[in-house]
Length: 172
Image 1: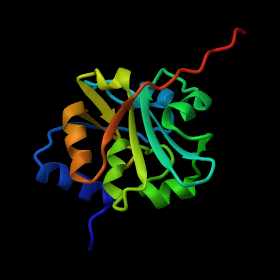
Image 2 (image 1 turned 30 degrees about the vertical axis):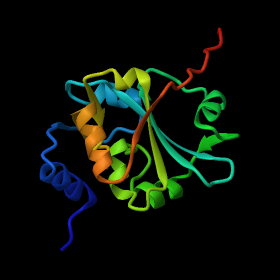
Image 3 (image 1 turned 180 degrees about the horizontal axis):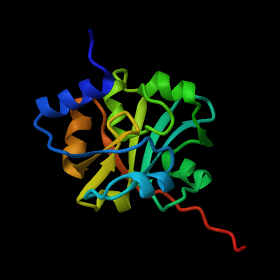
Image 4 (image 1 turned 60 degrees about the vertical axis):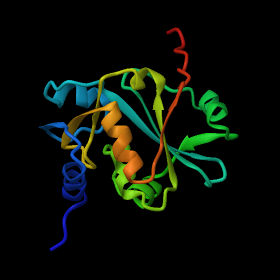
C-alpha cells in the first residue's frame, strides 16, 4: 500500500531534518475558520492563493498574511503578467495535488515538473515562522522561513519574496 501524499510530505521533512510543530484540528476552508478552529501555535497565519495568468501558461502560489487582501490587478504587474485570475480546483489538483482549502507552499512537493512559481509576501518573509497546511486542511504546521526555503529548494522551487499589493478597502 502506498503512502498518502501527507505521509510522504512528512517523511520528506523528516528525511531532510526539517523541524516543524504540528497541530491537528477540524477541517478549515477559510482564514476565518482557521482563526476560530486551529489551536494556538507559533507562527504567522497565512492566506495562500493559487493563481494563473490569462494565457494559462504561468501558475503562481502566493502566500500573504491572513488579514491582507491582494490587489490582483496590481499583483499581475509585479509578477510580469497581463492579468491574474484564481486557478480552478482542477488546475489546483493537477498542478499541486491538493484540494481547495488545503493550498500551501508545501504543495510544491507535489509539483515535480516545476510548473508553479512560489511567491512569499515580503511581510511574511520577515516573520520567524509561518503556518502551513501539510497538504490537508485538518492539520497545521509551524515551520521557519529558512527551513521552508530550504525544503522548496530541495524540490526544485525557489521561494521568491515579492511585495504583494494590498487591495484598498472601499468605505461602507
